[in-house]
Length: 290
Image (cartoon, rainbow, N blue to C red; front, side, top):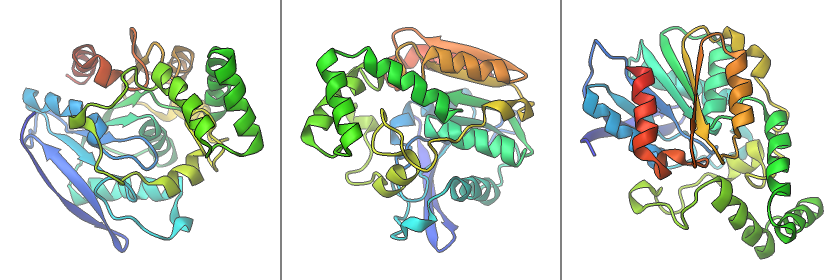
């Protein structure tokens, strides 16, 4: 992996951690990476750092409340607007006048909100990677995926979701089956992509997203920017896995609404296709950004 430098940006009364691979290159806009969650960290996306070998800066940051950034105790602050402001702040702090914006999963939701709500300047291209752009559509698709699980697993998931007992061991065991089919086929995340212990922001995840990947009942459950994607005038790449919880049907629906879109579906891939098929994934990203 290429060498990196890191630091902290002051944000409100807190600090946001960032990490930069590569050196500035006036001929190549840096790739600014938005991780998923909300509440995760940049670590699981570090495979993208390999793109710095082409002479392009790759910039990661841990959104407030997760990873190596500060962990506010005030749960009332969590909102889409907060994370848009943090994105604007990191661009200003690092003087990122021109960027290519990459958002994975929730990070793609954040990218869509940023592109549609403020119509920012200096975004040369945008990548929606396994990104939910319409939560109502996502919920429909996930219900289809759950019904395709073994009958006993589907019954177990439904029982606990209806009863509000999703913190039970039984529900977690059922979710492990869903996760292996649609999140990551391996039993465990490779060590080099694991986040630091106890660094996941559960509070913002539960408030904004919900109780689990398969049951998003948080305050963003009706959020959608699908109808607003015509505002994204720059070239866009929509990329996801064949067995992703961000299903090919969602990827195609997203691309259809974008004025200038390319679609890549990683054969055999799940939500973390970049870890399962890194060479194929990086080739697709490099082709688009170069």
